[in-house]
Length: 141
Image (cartoon, rainbow, N blue to C red; front, side, top):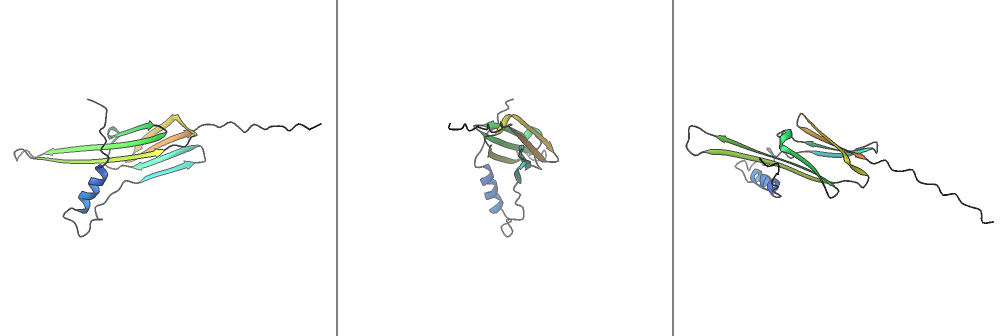
């Protein structure tokens, strides 16, 4: 089985459209659940990204670094077959995509990710920058 995940750039927009145009048109915001993503720095030493993905498992999530950006994708497909009916399949799909530009001081070799209780936490360490070199001024004599 391939590890490649097909990316649908319109999946989130289509999900929103389905929610707004569903039978529950009187209160369309009632079921709206947009995943929260927090991006912050800690003491100037690392960048932390926390994505709240309660409906996803680790196997559903793919994290990559692409051209100076951190790319987080998650996709989940569920099928439920009703054995009492012929040819009936109930399918649902959910996806998540975030692309976060990394600062120049990000060390792409020191990225770690963990997932606990539906929260994906990715930390990107910053490179140690050399201290500025002091230039001494010689007297003009």
